[in-house]
Length: 382
Ligand SMILES: [Zn+2]
Image 1 (cartoon, rainbow, N blue to C red):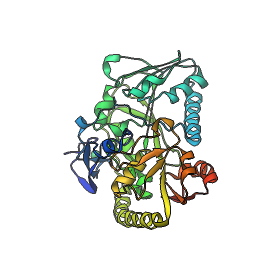
Image 2 (cartoon, rainbow, N blue to C red):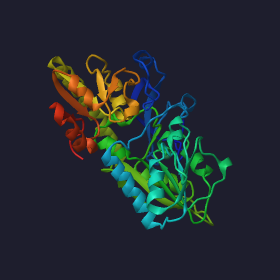
Image 3 (cartoon, rainbow, N blue to C red):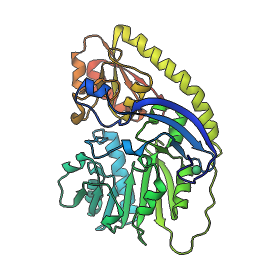
């Protein structure tokens, strides 16, 4: 298989894990269902030409985002704050006021609601998941489908946050977007450099079939005939975003920029991953001898962490989450029950809470206070 971005053949395999759940954000109604979910394999390859990382064993036909998929993060105050900041930034920088906003992969529509609220814009979103049906605003319309060319929609800004990493052929996808003269294209994806630097191996999961650094993301956009206005990092460097316009007129041959530092990061990651995962597996075994260990946040990271380390009940029995729609559901693959924070009151032994994202440390600490829980972060610094 060639690189899906530059079609290069110089690939380096560096991370393999087999038989992992296909969906991280699709929670199950019973433990039995949770354990018997569909599974797939991950074999991550680095393209040594353009710097993109992708799962060579990804099978697109296994994925269907029409399922009741829930990736909402806005229950977290720090995440909402971040989304508001981005919306205000775009509105001010590009004067997106009384204009038309199109978002592809709009989830439950929170970002579009901010784009309307702060800029009085007319907003249209595309979201294939059932969760899209929840929105109710005359200014924010969500179309319950995958975006495709047939819709032929024009807009002053096209927003696409956390979608590209789910698309195995991103060049084809970028090609399918409406090519509008004065339109701003704003894309946000996870920053793979942050995951590698922090040994966050649980950031590599099946739904995300492709991973970008600032360099590889710029290569993709240049190859797809966009003019890059700005590329930056957000949410404590965990995300990268790109602002671009459609390149008009004559197209010159694109020079691919090679990412020289990523190979070194990968070598380090490979070594640290082994040490780190063994250390945490042992720690959890020791902790659970005389304490109750829970994981905080039933997001994709928690699902990958539990599955890769093969941590099943009773070692960890519960995962806490503040999103009510996740309560009483079960973690795919390992089968932990998802409970609200108040559930911790029922636990009589000492509570040890493990968190996967340090960005939420302060708010989790606050919520854990009444239960005298001890908090451990997989990543210590931001
Ligand atoms: Zn490539």
